[in-house]
Amino acid sequence: MALMVLVCILGLGVALAVPSRWHWYRYETHLRNTNYAAATESLESAQRWWASTANVNLAKARILAEQGYGEEAMAAIVIAENFGADPSIASAMKSRLKWQSGQLDSRADQFRDPNFTTDDLAAIAMGHIVQGDFDEATEIIEAWQELDPHDASANVTASLISQEYEDADQTGKLLSHGVLKNPEHISARFLLAQHQYAQRNFDAALAGFESVIQSLSPHVPSGDRVSINGEQLHASRFIRALVLQEQGRIDEAELQFKSLLTSFDEDFAIRYSLANMHALHGHGDKILETLQPILDRFPEDISLNYLMATGETLRGNVSQANQWITKYLQARRQLNQLLEAERKRGNRPPDPEFYMQLAEAYLRFKWDDAKPWLDMAASLQPRSPRVRLGYRKFFENSGNFEQAARYSN
Image 1 (cartoon, rainbow, N blue to C red):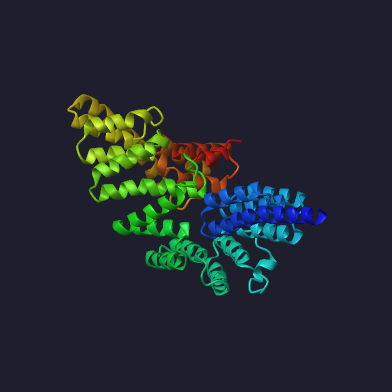
Image 2: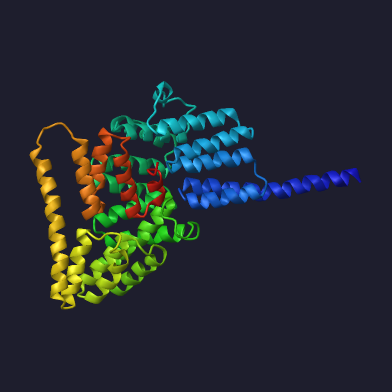
């Protein structure tokens, strides 16, 4: 009887371990493919099948770290340590978090150490990119590729450098090779589709965005445009609509824009793009209908004012069109005066107060062009409440409410 009980216990242990290992394998596969949403689902399934709490939290930390959420990743590592995680693994992960944020130490210089993993090299390379040391980053990426020639993430990271140098040909080659290495790699496919769209290779771009949508749609929560995959999915759907418009497939493009509005009803970019498409085809009533829901949020925006003037003109309402044009010209005049003042400043020392005047003017009149001025003000006064408020408004306007929340305090 005792033997039978022992056999039953062992059998139960195996029965519980097999599903956990299967979900763990899927987690690792999805993570390698940068499908973080699917990796999270698999990790949650592994946890339900009694996977180690320490290991689950270390895995969560990897997902968070790869998406750039350093503080959240560190918190997950600490939780894992409290549940008995291997100290050497936890320590290595903490080092990678520091490295990828640009906090490079003497050990990071020893990247030829045979004990270093591709994760180590990826973190060190990103740290050098953050610091603007692209030559050193390139050398480390080469070592990374020697260690694992099939890792598409190395190509994606290298493409960040070629983009900094505005080398479109090299960017395209790197991303194309990345997709050849791993056709399931989400980030490589997404960035390649973006590159193809910028090069006006619309057929290839459309196919790429469609593939990203197909891979991410089953896993990204509805309405998510904050996580890496959520933003990739949203951007893929949005640019797909723009491509269809470029190809003259107007009815299909309109359907895609309207589908996006079911989840993001007050999104500026979606409504502006849809209204602009209506303007190109002379549909005045549709312009007004599309823009009306966001006019209260952006009453002085010159892009909206100009489109509203276009819509009223197409409807034959000349008086109302003139009112919108007057608002447009007044705002444009104020922006031009500030830009002219910036030009006349010449080689005088940078002035954060003046940069904030420009940023706040753009937030009023053309908010999507405000960020460069906010960045310049922030480079001089990073803790300024006024600068933080400007960033919060910018990210709220763009629909990135999680990023906006980081500037709330």
